[in-house]
Length: 244
Image (cartoon, rainbow, N blue to C red; front, side, top):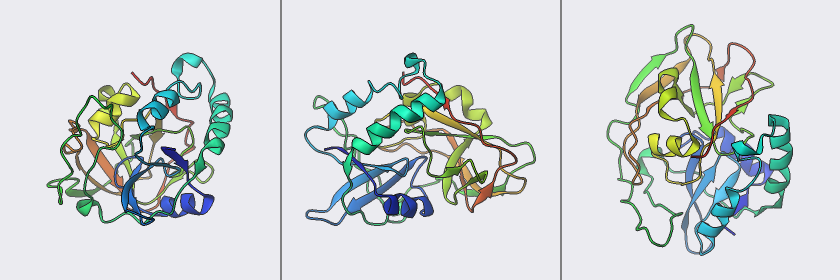
């Protein structure tokens, strides 16, 4: 099994840990031979094995992910939940190391492609600037699943250590795969669920450009909310982007 379901305790734990990138934690499993594991959307562990490419190709046919299925958001959630519940239980996971010390490794790729260059030991110039939000600022964030573990719609707040991008980025990621390349994520799953965030004035952020990593171009402007951040009003359900 390539995709594994985190337990509720693991989900709550990873929600409290700052992200490695938008919708992503890079960590390891201490069981047996230590291996790199990607936690996607704070809920699903992605582990490399021989069935990886076929399993992820099958995922692309799920109706809750396809824009052509013409489902409204509530129907997508109801279709997503049994798929998520059917996943096998996750293995034990370590806490992610500091972002600058994570070694890169692509783990999902067709056998005809070679792995991209590894992630460097340190990342020059990533989110080097600190600032605060202005009264009318809007930000966006893409995730792979229709439910977000870092955005609390009921409390209208965003978890500390959550990545997003400014409104000026909207033209550059019209699809889920475009977001993967724009923000240099190591997994090849499309991030097709786009959330809109309107943080309260003077919310603390780090900001800068996404640097090339994992064989992806990067170049997108990013922010990271340093603390638990309140939204100015209700947080709408995500917009569903096409994968392609």
